[in-house]
Amino acid sequence: MFHSIYIPIGVPTFDQKAAAGMFDSSAAALKAIDEDILCPDGVLLSVAAVENHIKGQSADLAVVQNVTFANGAYMAAVLRLLDCPVLLWTPVEPVPDTGRLKLNALTGAFSAGNMLTAMGRPFSYVYGAPEQTETDSALKAVFDAARVKKAMRALNLLQVGHTPQGFGFGRALDGEIQKAFGVNLLSIEARELIDRAKSYSAADIEPYLKDAKGRICGLDKIDGKNVADFARLYKAYAEYVKENNIGALASRCWSDFFTAFGTPVCAVLAILDDLGVPSACEADTYGALSMYIAQYITGKPSFFGDPVALNEKDNTVTFWHCGTAPCSLAREDTGAVAGVHCNRRIGPTLEFGCKPAEKATILRIGKDGEGKFRILTASAEILDRPQQYAGTSMVTKLNFNARRFVEEAVAFGWEPHYAVAMDDVSDAVEHLGRMLGIKVWRF
Image (tube, rainbow, N blue to C red; front, side, top):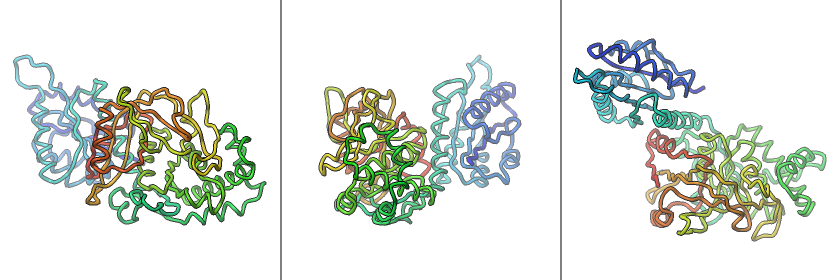
């Protein structure tokens, strides 16, 4: 369970009536985001009061608010007792009336930020009144980041097989991914799931066939043996995921599933996405983790694909892959249609363009030339466009110059696979990077 704590600090020499009002409205705003947040009865007016409020507590996020001015000793006390991400929040000073400052909270925030920096603790910062919509959105983004940071520490991420030659950018090491993100990495060979799939009878796979036919149009037009073998793979993956509490996976696809099994795994991964298990193909583990972050924050399946076309006139980048997008992302006028792989001509894969969305985010966890982790994020809109190429496609209109996005992403060595989240999560991703100590490139 996620635990947050509200630590409103101040001193008794400022306007206590104004401070009490600010405390009440701030606490209400925070409870609207996390109803279980631990709140004191009022502003904590001494270092001792701060210590009494948080002593013996554990938290996944501490919200420290200078309701009035308070010196750096208050923040030092917080850092001594809590080892968790910190959100520093400053309310707006009441309208001046030529009298004394009522709160002087902003000066207190400078003291708190200075102490955090001196202690080497990264933190998130929000400035704004609790009644403002922009403030609520900013606060929620920090909570989203803290929640996904905690969730990753309980995540079992499965690697099925290894990356194909030339795709090493997606390969992960267990100790490295755990150190950076808290993720537990599990690995099996693709043949283990293929052998499972081969063992199932026609009766065993009947429920999986029925479920797939409710999600995918036109399976009856695909070779019957391939459809049955696809259902076998679906059962093998779904059962392994359930047995091992898998929260995301990256699966090898070509060439093993074409050559050793005769049926692609694309549509299986698409269904797993819709079942809440983000699943990347080509064994791209960091692609799967990018999808997990996108899906965790939005509560919706994400797209996974390559940037394949730039349209400067529309300021768009088209993302595509060969048939593995979640069925729920298909355009309503077509649905998720069964097809055959664009290169191997074996099915079932998926064929559709993605439905539009006013807000989306392009997202990638990657590494720089020195092997250090970094995160790319870019806000966008998904346009109402039909299928662009054989497979599954999505046309994204960036909130940034699309040509510059392509040129800079290529020039600085970003990977060729991206997740696309079905909402604007760039703020949350930026806060997450700060909490993890990982550089964020925001376009």
